[in-house]
Image (tube, rainbow, N blue to C red):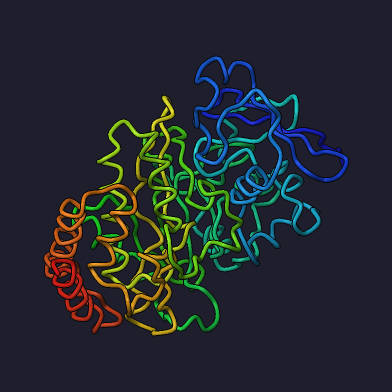
Length: 411
């Protein structure tokens, strides 16, 4: 097996820097002179947590950013087994699957250049087998898994063509992810149906959200989600809030406490890098409010993202991975991110959302207007949403929560 000493980091196909593994096992990033010349020292075209610098970059922010490009739990373990990489070896695993990651980042062995890769068409039986076997990911004969996406739920990344599905090989872009209903007891049956319904609800309420559809493959119900970072047929850059904050994936849920929380920290930093800071804060508050209103007990730091354009300007990415799990099971009461110091969905009020937004730098009246408008838009959207075939009590419970959030924000 060839030992990879360094990985070249590309952003939108252009060299951004080099990641090297040191003798002590730590990682070091050196940004390319061309990148510094284009954006300038201190700019953040890659991540809020990794500003460009002439100095060599080492430490937890770098290692956590790279680690968050990879899946978690059983999905990661399956990739490590396939590529004969020891558990926890982020550098080693990215040397195999770094050619297609979230956003516009690619990590390739030193000396390699980005290519279009190739697409291997899949027939219906092959797609069904791949989905049925998840979280074990078995590629078609003669091919390997060369794509990666963060998260703990089992999924497969495929490319949709005009004639069907194809396996993205050797750095080819994926366009969709397919995520089947989880095996075992999660406390929330029919989770993929809930997610699909909720994404449609968000769009009906005027909140940009990933597009999805439901399918049955290999005897498993699954959600097919269109990648918003591949929307125009090219790689669009984005990072999740765990990366932006320099958090390890294991720390994606925030505890309760006093003082400014993670959302305040990252909102202020991202707004400083936005063309329209006020718009970024309003868009982020709409998403946070929506997740509180619907009872999304999984709205942690990896389930919010920022987009980063070619000028290193920041915006809020479309909503994804959202579902009213708290309305189905009280076990999912954690809000994921603390809101005005609270992290329990049964305790957070509209007033707390306003206070939280004030800590980002928003005026109270502006924040209150966003919270009320979002809650009312969700109420209206529930009335026009497609019928939910499972958990028939969810729409009514959601309307009640939306009204309560709107009323409590006015106090």
